[in-house]
Image (tube, rainbow over all chains, first blue to last red; front, side, top):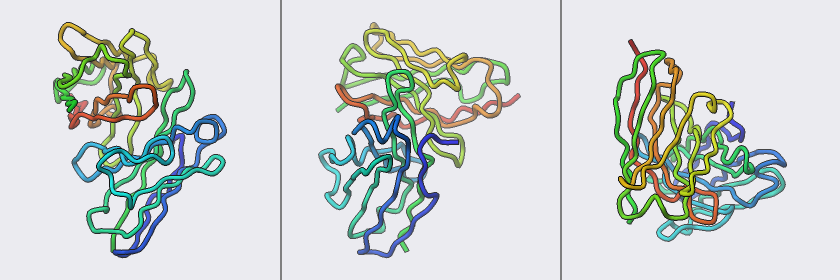
Length: 111
Length: 119
């Protein structure tokens, strides 16, 4: 069982917006502004999309945005494109003894 | 551009020890980063295994702690993973990754290597 809870799947049509939630606890997501999001296409390594809750690395489209409220972080993808179809994982810092915890992953289908 | 490349046996016998190495290019394992291992069983999600800081400090996933050792070889600019007493449940794609300096996210990943535990 993953430490962070994500919906197993979400879907949307091209051009629409979707949001993926990532629920943790007051010991990880709720305590630290250190949530990151990764995109993973089949057979590929994960790729960083968002770090420190809402920051975008250079080269990542501004269609990707992140936020947090309480123990739940969210990834929003606007203007959905076919290439966004992938698995998405959240990850949070969980303190010096536990370091990092992942969510179970969410499969995004672009209809 | 930092690049990470995993290597090691693709098949390990049950009760044996899984050993993988991650070669780092375009960067140094002596830099202020955490050097990490993450795995992904077939069809499942990502699981953080553990990591080592350039100074030698280590942090391990509590569920694997008794079986995991991560080490750094500065002379070869690489770091390694050893997982002992493996079972079929340890079959997974193993990724090495670099933890970003002064924060807690992975900024570079290796391509991953599949390790199967089977007799």
